[in-house]
Length: 383
Image 1 (cartoon, rainbow, N blue to C red):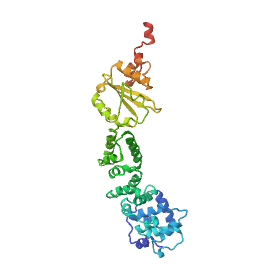
Image 2 (cartoon, rainbow, N blue to C red; image 1 turned 180 degrees about the horizontal axis):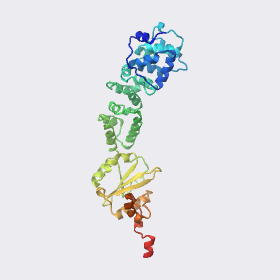
Image 3 (cartoon, rainbow, N blue to C red; image 1 turned 60 degrees about the vertical axis):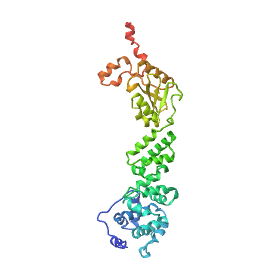
Image 4 (cartoon, rainbow, N blue to C red; image 1 turned 180 degrees about the vertical axis):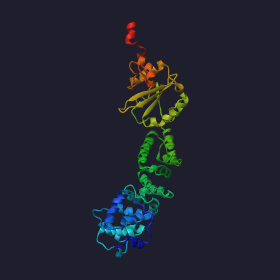
């Protein structure tokens, strides 16, 4: 049996002073190989990033319950005298220790795609998060439908995390762009981005694949990604994808969304423009009361699909006249819109709020305004 030092000499390498350990699925499989081929784990710890990655790729294809096929492919890449055992796991271990990186990949996949070894040399010393990531890399570099992904992958300069490969495989084809890839560092963010892309396509008639790809050229840093999304939602020309509480042809209310929110904000001097995202996802709705003197109504969607009146504001976020607020509120309620209730008894809530330092106890203007003027039972008796 070859000693660790003689194995290092056989592959023409010297052990690094500081080993680089790894964990997870790769360590579990490496330990099984090490049991049959002592020193396999130690030598893998000291291997270069490229050699380690090719070993991980081979381990990712290993079925330990029937390793004979893997052993047959791998033992063919090393001299026969290096294989002195009939144990297939030991044969795999010896082959992975002695074999060259290109030969290992060729034995595992049957071919070595252009660029694969270069990618493996640049993704660092840690194994991919999932063993299937190595097969994904191979598919990306060989299958025609992934040609665009492979092109973007090759545009990455220097070292990069294997997470980038996983991200690339999950991206919608229209988002396969080096600027997008440069902004993403977590796989979970991709799912959010895909939902956002679907929202943009639903709300913006101009969001063709060609137009979306052109817009990605403007992204430079991760902070540009939210700006990119915002720029599309401003172009929103279709109503939010939710059940609206009011008829679209209502003569008194006009639903504002997309660029209409900016127009509304400038005309009535309020922050309607900041609600672009909230309106687009159907969390809030902003209606303009078009009768003079005008007002802005904000509704919030509840879990059961109904809508709650959050606020009515006049010009420059001022409180509208009581009669106007009452008229707006009554019409909204006639369409099933809910309103907040005031504390009871509402006549004493103002004083309580001062004593308790809880000023939100004061009666809300959206409560039944007439009830606020009704006398309490004591006052009625005195009268």
